[in-house]
Structures are given as structure tokens and as C-alpha cells.
Length: 428
Image (cartoon, rainbow, N blue to C red; front, side, top):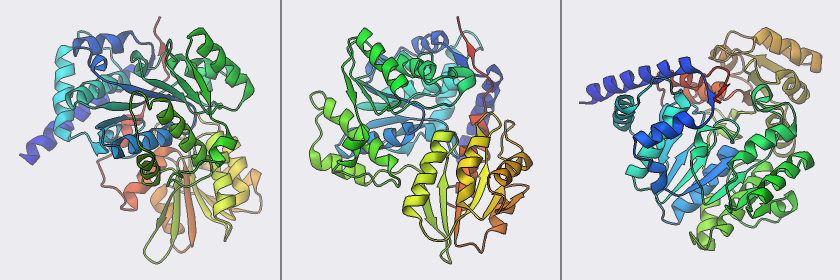
């Protein structure tokens, strides 16, 4: 039976890989059509919709942990995945079973009238149908890219959360904070409360304006509020205090609809788990490895701050790989002064940045460092096996591969390739 399930799962994955030919769309028409074919499952569910440049996943994980700890049945939809596609769709932190992936792919494949859905649109509706079938009390719902025209934006949530605004995906979302904020603020719905930790004045003005236009009550979470937070999250890093404050403010706003006791909030924050984000691993022999998907400039600045505050001992060895479409020269400049030894590697993506170019970026930023471009992560792990402290960072592709190679998660046969997508096209 297991062989049949595995075979069916492989066929389902092959179909999902095939959807990548359609790239990524900005627009809601296809998602709405697919959802309607499935009976509009989103109408049977309650959502907290989360957008932003960084911190979306951590904030979602905190909200999920709080509400699950309070006894609710909680769906969690996030992207990208680190290892298995099944990570994207979870109920009470249990990955969707392989046989449900097979069944949902078959159902949507049979129902849809045109073969033009993208992988993300297809996955979004799969998640909606599964969460409705599982009778989830609440769904923590993370945007994929942007917000306004993101496939997830077909829902009307109980609350909209915008973590922060920074420059990322500028070729698609816009080259200014104002333009990016306008896309993220697209998840704001009429009279639905909004919570944000956005600090940049130009981005905040846009969010405030969209909230006013929608008569949506806006709550700002500012760093002073975060630093006074009593219930601390278990995740490492000062920025997680802000994410925790954001989650706490959201829970407080929704208390009339979904009451949660103070002790449940504390317990939820204290036990939250979110791999690959400042995740510290101690290997046999005592070597410490820090895994962090710092894939944009703001993320790299957060990583640098965490290293300077929490790891003041010997300089780490940095293993770094990035996608070509990221602002990796700026990331190199931020991280280079932190290490005396740096290994650059390609990541398992057609969009990978060249390891040699990355190495040149680090050399220019820190001429005193020993920098080498290596063939891949296995070579870098081998070259750093005797080092006391190693930081593996950059692309989440690289972090996912590291989780597999370090034996921290089962290998799933290269499903990270399902994170690939081509330039989004706007649907008019």
C-alpha cells in the first residue's frame, strides 16, 4: 500500500512541477475560479492574513502556536518550503499527508476547465479545500508575493497583519518602499482590523491611507512596545520580540471573537518552532551551526545584529549562497566583516548566483578574510568540519539543503525544486 501511495505522490509531484511552466501570475481571477469549482471552501473558514517583507513566517508560526495551544484546530499555509512541499499545508503543525496531496491534485485537476493555473494558485486552493475538510477553527494564511494581487487575497480575514516593509522583489513589487507598501496593503479589507510593525515613514503613510479608505482600524506595534513584551518567544533574535508583539497585538484585537487566556498566550510563544530562521544546532563533537535564511538586505541586517549580540565569541565561518535576483552585493557587504573565513556555494536553483561572483563580493567587502568559492554545500561542510562555529545563510534553498544534509529533517527527493517560479505576469 505504501508503494502505491508513494507512486501516486510522485505522479502528483510531477503534475505540480508541470504547473511551473505558467510561472507566477499577479491576479485573482484564476484562483477565484478554481476555488469556485471546489465549492468556495474559503467561505467556511476564518483567517488571519499575514503579509510583509520579512518576519511573515515567524509571525505566522507564533500565531499558530498560540491558537493551537488554546485548543483550536489551526491550519497553517506558508511558503516557500524548506524541504517538502507538504510543509506548506499543515493542520496543528502536522504536514498534510501524501495521500491527501494525491487526492486533492486529482480533484482539482479533474475540475479545472483550463490548464493555466500556476503552482501557487493551485496550492492555494488545495490548502483551502483541505482546511475546510479538516474543519479548521482558524487558518493562519501567509501571502506568497506582495498581497494585493497575490492568490491568497481571495479571502476576507478576521485580521490583516503587515509585518514590515523593505526593498525586496523590487522588479515585481516596485522600486520604492511606497510602491511595495501599496502592494502589501492590498490585503486590507473594509472594516477588518489591521496590525503592522512597519517603521519606515513612507511605507507607513501608505498603509495608514489604505486603512482609512477601508475604514479598517489600524494598530501599530513599535519597538518600544516589543521591548516591554512580557511573554517572550522561544525564537532567537531581537527582531523576534517585534514579531511576538505583532502576534500578541493580533490576538488581543481578536479576543472578542476568539478568546485566549493569558497563560495560553505565554505558553504558545514559549514553545513556537520555526526552522531555518536563526536556528542553532549543536553537532556531535560540539560544533555549533546557525541556519538562517537571510535572503534580502533587511534579513542580512537582522542576522548581523543577532550575531553581534548573541554570539560575541570566535568569529564564525560563513557558508553563503544566494539567488541571482537578490541584492546579494549589499548582503555581502553586510556580512563580510563578521567572518575571517567565508565559503560561497551555488544553490540548487536555475536562478542561483554564481559562487565565484559571490566570493568576489565578499573579498571586496573584507580583503582580510579567507574567501573561497566551492562546488556546493557538501564541500563547504567538509571544509568547515573542524570549525567551532559555522553560519549557513542566504537563500532558503541552501538552508533547506543544510537541514537535509545535517540530518535534521528527512530527505524528500528534491522537492525544493517546487519553489522555482519565473517572473510574475499581471493578469488584467
